[in-house]
Amino acid sequence: MTEHHPPVPRDWWKSAVVYQVYPRSFADGDSDGVGDLAGLLSRLDHLDRLGVDVLWLSPVFRSPMDDNGYDISDYRDVDPLFGTLAQLDDLIAALHARGMRLIMDLVVNHTSDEHQWFAESRSSKDDPRREWYWWRPPRDGHVGGEPGAEPTPWGSVFSGSAWTWDADSGEYYLHLFSPKQPDLNWESHEVRRAVHSMMNWWLDRGVDGFRMDVINLISKRVVPITPGLTAGLPMGEVGGTDAPSAGSVDATTYADASPYVVNGPRLHEFLQEMHREVFAGRPPGLLTVGEMPASTVDQAQLFTDPARGELDMIFQFEHVDLDSGPAGKWDVAPMTLVQLKQSLGRWQTGLADVGWNSLYWGNHDQPRAVSRFGDDRPEHRVRSATALATVLHLHRGTPYVYQGEELGMTNAPFAGIEDFRDLESLNQYDTATAHGDSIEDVLVALRCKSRDNARTPMQWDDGPHAGFTGGEPWISVNPNHREINAAAQVDDPESVFAHYRQLIALRHTEQAVVDGDFEMLLPEHEQLYAFTRSCGGTVLLVVANLSAQDGVVAEIDDAAGWAAAELVLANSSVDGVPRRLELGPWEARVYRRFEA
Ligand code: TEU
Image (cartoon, rainbow, N blue to C red):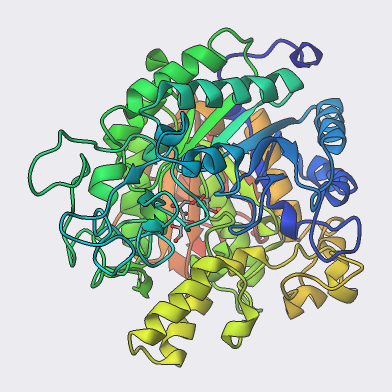
């Protein structure tokens, strides 16, 4: 269906904005309490009005839903919970008719344990598909299934061991996530061929690319078998200091697998092969973004250098790990604005000449942006959400908007553990309380960091269940939907939604937003986030007070000149022509001027 698109430049995505839909929580068309494709199809006007260019749809494939669809049992069909393949074709057509593109979630580090491939693989040690997954015997001198017999002491991201014992075939299989998400063995060229063929099938059907789930975990560090190592996998140390950056591995009981599974030795080779087999021969208009926890700027440069033929951009995790302490995600730590600027600024500089950034504050795995990086108290919420958006969207890179972020949706007021649904949160609760942590301490961390914060239903209106469903929602709707909802915002020029619309439109019209060089100003300032973007003779100044403090003055070169420049965009009105740049709580402005 690519022939429907007008000719597009290869790097069209530099001026694009992507909107992420987590289908389970977006809109429910059949009143079973779970969002679905019918619901999404009925809400495309919302995306259209916002002006986004691309929809990233989290998984809708067949799945037992252990991890809400990130455990796929059939890559070539839609789960009945979400609808039908015909509806997905309708979605592709409807988006293309509106000039939008669709990228699907590609989850190929692992499958579901209910995928046919795994069923065959586990059926016997001699099955031809045995080597499609990571099977290993118990540790030397141990009996399979007993504690301590796991091939390596690696922990899973979702608590517990990364190995599960299969008594029937007498071996363990590896799962870096849940036991229902066995890791595929990418060393097998048959696995790689099967994945490429599935990807080509989707592109032929009309999808425009993929967001690739934990794609930097597909190459594992397999080493020759020597004493002290189990069957070619290194052990790792229990209690090691390298907490996995994105995960929540219980470091007192398990070893961190990340040195052996993150950005492994054949990753570049696998990505280049995928590019050749799937993307290289196709016309421009496709988008690839790899989710890559624990990746550095230097690595990102290699992954996204167009000359290398790997990916268009990656999701890095540095800025969303700043509020994690040494013990990982649940060890909630304070984060300063100076640290945040240092981190994002380094990515701007590092990918200035080669490669490209993706930009995000949130997604379905992260707490709500305004609650985490901003101030969600009623008196600051709107300005804080719009200030954050201004800063992010004016960086160099492709911005991603997570559903509800454009409304300034907040974290949820979860009370007890019965309010949570996510397996990661539920496992963490069990593990931490079994360890002796107090229930209240565990809940405090969950309320802050649980992925369920992002997964409460989209707030469409102030009616029952926020207009999300005619049934009982699978997870509670945030009671603040009475104030925070789409219906109240789409026609209000002062709303968070209207501000996002302006930011997206600005990227479409102002070349300096897309291509301009980035220069950080006032890096040590504790309240202000300020930078310029320059392109040709155009210079944009972005200045935002990311604090609740009033009267914060930006002391930059030629502040008076800037204060008199054209105000392109702001989240609060500026009266007259001030002689200096003084900002109120969470105030953000974008100025433009032309320099010879
Ligand atoms: O996430 C992988 C990942 O590293 C995380 O963001 C993870 O959810 C978080 O660290 C947990 O603390 C991807 C998907 O986005 C996520 O929803 C899936 O659960 C996961 O992979 C497994 O497929």
